[in-house]
Length: 94
Figure (tube, rainbow, N blue to C red):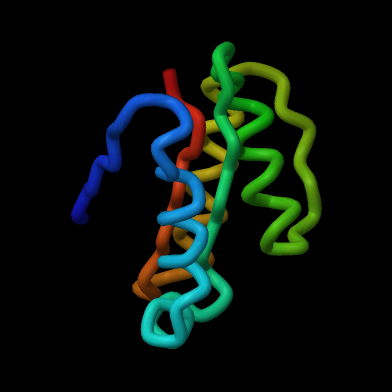
């Protein structure tokens, strides 16, 4: 696993830069359908973040009862993806 943090003051173009990265042909070839771009916002909601990932994958949406079951559902989804590379962009994280 590799984590890269893009940090700068608001309005500096972080989101624009990362969107261009996600649109790059080499990146799209490497990650294929496993590029997830999720806007987190000021009040992070794990259920909402996971729901957006499920929607992107066009998977059947489980009912997220608690944060724990939500994380378990996300783990099952990621296991179904297997060893394929995943690019997860969490935008607007405060």
